[in-house]
Each structure stands twice: as C-alpha cells, then as structure tokens.
Length: 275
Length: 324
Image 1 (cartoon, helix red, strand yellow):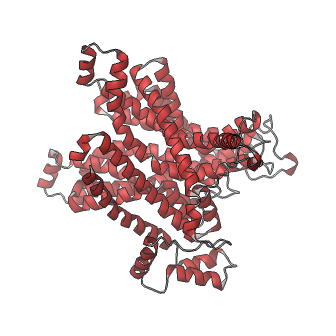
Image 2 (cartoon, helix red, strand yellow):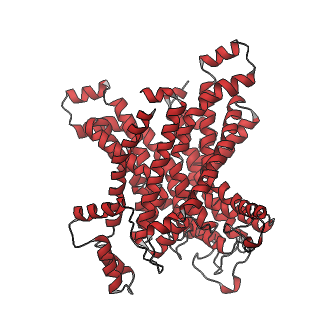
Image 3 (cartoon, rainbow over the protein chains, first blue to last red):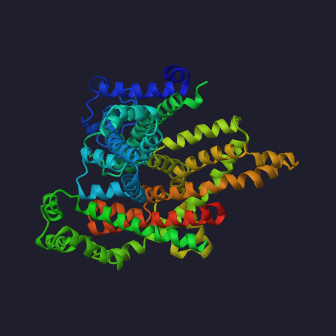
C-alpha cells in the first residue's frame, strides 16, 4: 500500500487534516469571515454574553470575541509555523551533521542537546524574554531556539542507520561530496520523520505561544491572540465564562488536529504497519 | 552500586559547566550591552541603575574574565542582589520559595504514579476494551490540553459555580485562628486544584507509556512460563509483569521533572501560590535580572539532580544497569 492509501484509510488522520485545513482557510479569509472589526471598541456593550449579534459574546472593551478569535487564528498559525520551521532547520542540520560524521562532532552535538534538555523549556523561554522585548517575532524565535533538541535526536538516529547503506557508498564512489550526500542522498530518506516532528511541533508551539500570551509575555494587546483573550477571561472569571471557554476550546481543537495529523503521517509512513 | 553513583555524579560536572555557559550566554543575549538595553527600555533608568548593572556584569572586562568571575560567585552560592525594591539576596529569595514548589511537584509525581500506572496496566490487560478506548481518547485530549485553560475551567466550576474549593493562595484569611487539624485541611483544600493541574500533563504521558510497556512485557516468554506454571492471572499480571513494566517508568518520571518545574510558573501564577515559579514570573515582569538568572540556574540544577536520583534508583532496582 502506498503512503496515500494508508493515510486515506485512517479516518482520525483525515479528521486531523480537515481541522488543520479549516484553520488555514479561517486564517486566510479572516477579514471576510470576521463579523466585526476585531479592534472595534463598544463601551455600551461591555462583557455581553453570547447572543445572536455576538455569537461568542464581547470582552471587557465590548469587542466581538468571535472576530478576535478568527484573527487570533492567524497569529497562532504564524507563530506555530515560523517557530517550528526554525526548530526543524536547526535540528535537521545539527542532527544530520552529528549522525553523518559521528566521532567527536557527534559527541559534542549530543552533549549540547543533553545540556539544553536540563533547562525547563518554559524557564529558558521566559528568561530570554525578560532580556528581550515580548513581541510576536521574539516569541517565535525563542520558541524555535528552545525546541530543536528532539528533532536533532530523531534526524541523527535516521542518519546513523542510513549512512552505511549501499546507496550512500555508491554516491561516495562516484565522488559526491559530503554536503551532496547529506542533503541530496540521505536527507530525503529522513523526510517522513521530520514531517511528523514538524506537525507535532506546530501543535507544541501553538500551546506554548498561548501560555505565554495568557501570562502577558507573549503576543501583546491589542493584537488578538487566543492566549490573551483568556487573560481577560481570568480577570473576569466570575462574570464572563464565555471569555474563558471559547478561546481555550479553539486551542484544544487546533492542537488535537495537528496531533491527529502528525500521528496519521507517522502511521502511514511506518513500513512495519504496511500489510 | 557506590561506584556507579560516584561515576554518575562525576558525569554531572561537565553538564554543570555547560549549564553555566548557557546561562551566561542568555545573560549576554541582550542586543548591545545590558546597560544600553536597560536605558532603552526604561527611560527612567537612573545612573545608579546603570552602575549596578555595570558592576553586576563587569562589563568593562573581557568576556572570558566576566564568565570566570561570575562562575566563582555562583560556586560560592552568591547569586547577587535582587533589583526589586527589597534589595535582598537572590539566593535567600529563592531558597524560601523552593519548598512550596518542590512539595507541589512531589505531590504531583505521587498522583501521577498512583493514577497513571493502574490506568496503563488495566488498558493493556484489557486491550481494545471499552475502558481501553475511553482512556485512549482521554490521554489524547490530555496531550492537547492547554493546562492553564483547564485551570481556568476548574476554577470556574469548582471554585465559583459550586464553591467547593478556594481558587487562590495557600491559606484562608482565618488560617491563624484555626486548630492544627483545620489548618491542615485548609492547606489541603488549597492544594487540590494546583496539584491536579501540575500532575495533569504527566498523567497522559505516563499512562500511555505504561500501556505500551505492559503490552510489550505480557508477550514475553517468562509470562508464558508463569501462566504455564498455573499461576493465577492476578499473580501473573501484578507480580511478574508489573515489576518489569514499572522499571523503565522510573526514567519517564525523571524526564518529566523539567516539565513539572517549568509548569510551576503557570499554575503558581494562576493560583497565586508563593513558590519559585511565581517569583520567576514576577521577576521576568519586573526585569529583575539577577533573580531571573538565579532561578534559571536553579531550575536546571534541580532537573539535573532529579535525573541523577532517577538514574540511581533505576540502578538500584535493575542490576543490569550497574554492570554495563
């Protein structure tokens, strides 16, 4: 069975793909889909519960929560993709070099990974943000810079198992250089596991961004993000449950979607599961 | 055994040096010099503030010299003085808050083991049963759940809607007038939600791991032998299989330590618990750099110690580790 046949038979993975695609569409069409301007303040309509006019209610400044969530989807997606892209880039290069060359280069890279893993990730991110300004770009970079260790281990393991294969020897025999062997010959064989790590990584980055924004050190108001709508939810916890419920549900469903998709890709690309 | 422990402890030295280098790097990460940054961000930064930063980082000296003198201070336990208005020693500020954080983290670890192990074992033994399917869904949701959101929902439901549990702090206002027994009960009521939230992430991970491990173990030959001997299913599962499936779980618990410590920032901030995580959050917000650096360092050292304890207890439990 091919990858697509395997993937197509997995209903949960298809559901995950559907959720991820839906999120893409919502982000792309945010200006068309949002019923109100996400920044429009309406002081006569503060903390209004969900109604026909405002499906998800309004926040402490009378802004429409649904519109802010639709624009917030853009932020989540942007942070998820750029942060994960950075982590995958660093992890792939370090893992490929460590796995391909072995020896002291491998030891040095892996010790570096071990040391980075000693830091509670959330501590490291917060410490760096204390020194920089909390802006969306800094958040993306910091999440990326602290999230590459798992990818490095994965890519390294793939490279170690691939580097002695016949096709690599053949490439070397015809005089291919190291860079060519690493990127043109071996890397394509490791793409499946990198893709899985990237999909699960987007989910993780979205979770981290929302936690940071919730604590007030992530995406800064007035830019809407799911995390900072929840901050307002906490401030009005006894009077406005809708501010706490819907953005969290959006985060949960998004992360579930990416996790289902990631596990679906993993199962479909696992040769042991092919019958 | 002693030899293994000593060897394992010596391996920590290069790790500690690496940790100190990364901390030092984070400190130097600020664009330009830290004093420039301070003035850029805070137009009210006084000359005195700049001087304090200057002497803290010894910016007039070359970088390796800065690192060595910083390291010397750290080794002596000198983490500097806080920039906050109390000007206290950072080491003191952190030390008085560590017990709360470690207590909550240990309670969470206990909850994780007590709940996740039976769930994992039961779903492996009754593979593909309704119980197995329902826990699989719950575990999947557990992995995707933003814990701070779950904390909000539980606060709304149990704290505000039902009014069963307090939603902030560790003690009620009338704590001092209560009997010892009532004080303990009060403390326990305040701890229910924070401990549950802190344990939540680990629960999903360990129960999924225990299930996979148990499935692997019950297919081994020695389980077949135990059954062939005519032992009851109970004895086979709990005496022969569980012991072998539990061993690798020690490593997983060790690996969950950085997550627990990191998570303390979130739940201590939400529930207003005076621990290390809350201090860290307040220091980040106030740009109290010495305290931020101190907690970053201590967090990494605590993780390292946790991993050491996990590795040594694994070696105690499994003789094969000691030999290799």
